[in-house]
Image (cartoon, rainbow, N blue to C red; front, side, top):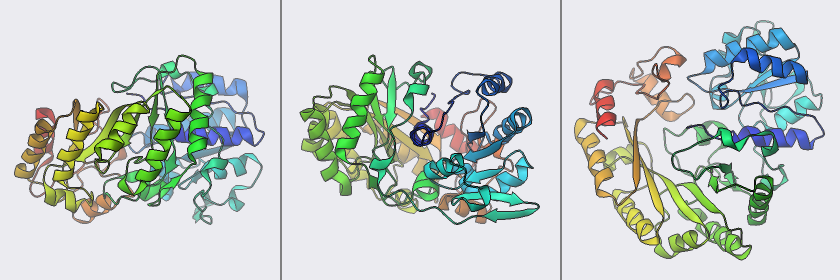
Length: 407
């Protein structure tokens, strides 16, 4: 699976709208070696290079930045959840390969740098001054998301991106940022976007869909990548969005990340009429106490009602299940497997809870001595698949991996 770089493309669109020339390259999606990427960057001759990094790839990301900085010069900045959670660690390990890292939402931070604002004066940056770690003033969250440019998809080949659950080719769309839920393991709300759901207007979202369809006439599906489009507290907006998609005759299949909050059959039927085909749903655990321990804010009874109503509405459901929550045992893990087989869903995936830096789950695991990894690279296995990052008193990493394989 190769996910669309939606946040990064929005930032690129913001910088381009500010009057700057950009060159966008997703080398990972193209399986492009760094050496080849550098030659393409040389041809563009950028004044600034911005890198998106992840926890398990951070060492390789820093090394790529080092190679690029030596070859190109200029300003080099890294963005994303990992560097937001671990800014000083990233900068120390980069040892000069990076001039700064951007903290949290970076759209306007990168735009300001492109406009010529100095690193030392730019809100939202962390950097090293000699040997001193410096964190500039924080940058407030963007309140009016409608003022952001649409993602710079014209620089992307959508044929580079595949996902088993999506119609091909597809694009992602962010209709809002932030999530009111407090799940302890979820990184984006805790590190990047906060726990308020800041939404774009329905008209802006529909306008972007029309823009995407014109840009890519063969587009088959839109995937809403909001942390959750379907939270019960946002249901009125969801209904308004579905009605607008029908009224404007957008005629596009769509999918979304979802919670089990949206279990009203009539709302699900409306979603179906507006084009909803598939929902990726975080059921997570089959034991209520483990759900409570991770502050999921959902019940097993809700899960059954949602799954049955979604099935009756004709919406396909992909269920996400996990092992390794606080208080997890072989008995509670078995309940999760049982739940996955009881629900009328179409497909399912099983993973370990991953302790990502910046989350309260990571802090809990670290403080209790449950983390077994010592290097960021160990967050994935030799095949770059996620694996258990912790050993729990009631469930070992080997047992967690066994439950994943059984699922």
